[in-house]
Image (cartoon, rainbow, N blue to C red; front, side, top):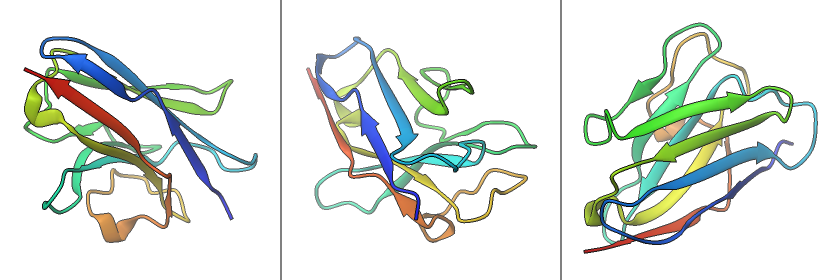
Length: 125
């Protein structure tokens, strides 16, 4: 079973940047189809961005133009570059992957089978 490991969270002032990374803890799972989600206290987990092996990268409207997903195939790692962070971006961020790589980006929490432990992102005003 693939387990995902996130890193890169932290505390940053509004307007600052952070880069999150996500990789499988064991080899054998290619990160061509995966998603980033976030959850803040009292709210449901929400889609942030996602990739697929065939379709374009998808972003939630709230992060378009500020967040960028990239991938390092050699390291089998996916990154979420977050720029111009806002206090409302404060949340625990999770990466997720489906059992079967999807040709197009999956948007729902229930579409994903493997999840990381989450990494806290806190943006101060």
